[in-house]
Image (cartoon, rainbow, N blue to C red; front, side, top):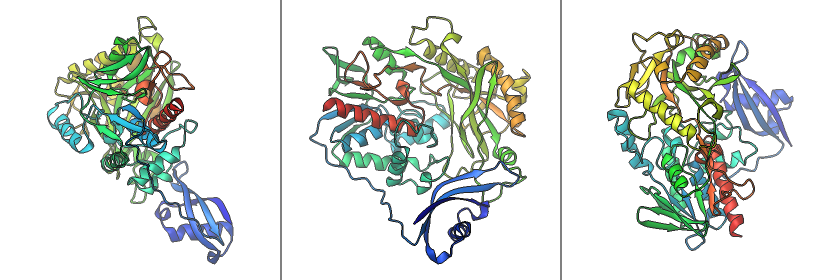
Length: 515
């Protein structure tokens, strides 16, 4: 017999197997001799009361044993199977490739950036010298943006596909099994490269192909159908192309337009990345002076309606670092990440305002309307920072009170920050909403509204400002058969897990088209 129950445990006993077992026996009022195993299904922190507790959903195996689940992946050899081109080696591209192999198709991945090992050198140049390789950076390269920006796996995409399948695939390639049970699973930037390398080796061992340092320069179109891509003078041909290039590959959008392939402008969110000392967040969320050794660094999620417009935090990084995520010269883009231990002294989060099509002048039919606006803000941030990837920044209270900060707090952004009036960077629509939302956030979370917090600009790559249309059933572009727009860059996902699911869904669609 298997009983599913919830246990509420103090933090110091949340990982104690003996304590968990005894608690389960007590909750069910049965002797410990009858319980063979207690399996944790889900684990979360509940800080709503005066005392912080862990809530564990568990299966209790009474008078029977659990059949162990072997998490492994075996793929057939597809070296002589029908080829499918996959443009981009982020989570969407990699999981599309894994699914193609399962289905008996041969994925050929084309990635503009470098593999994870070589990519590290370009990230070091960005942080230390402010030098950007437009093809290998925090956004471009093996594993995509998620590899070096945290590996947060939290998603609400339950209806899009099998979330547990994605998580179990990561586990089979080296991730800790904690991601299967934690309410907010997280791998960590320090561990993701090894996992991505393992996935690559599986793909190659199955007879697939992966090409790095290969930026698509054009599409091969014959008879109104997609037939492949060009990388300079080199041709890669296939009747099926999964386009999984991410939301920062702006050149792809221009290549699509050159080939008269329909694009659409779409809303996105814009704002800043806000960083606090982690202890401020811990004190507010855990209601204590000191977090203690049994609780992880705390996170938060905040949202406020300001003049009928949503202002919200996202991509919150406890114990994290603000990273320079520009993909070209003369622009500033920031993001955040955390190592697996989340042991840095700062907590940061994107804090943004929704920008709608009607907010900007110009025709709603112009697909580049939102992208041009996004790029203009990033260039203004570069000018305000003074160059070399130095980011414009302002203390929180100073920003709200329209005051230039005399100095800036110590922070995690390695290229450096410069005191600036962020109103010269952000449009009025954005900064006025933020100025009203931040004090309101402070009323919701004690200690949040403080001049110890720093606002760093700009957080602009929250999602794609364009959509590449696709048919709901076939997943193909309505005007270009054989083209399968995929994941974040096409406007259909947001985050590692949802992108991975969309990649698999596109591979399924290719299989249906082939058969």
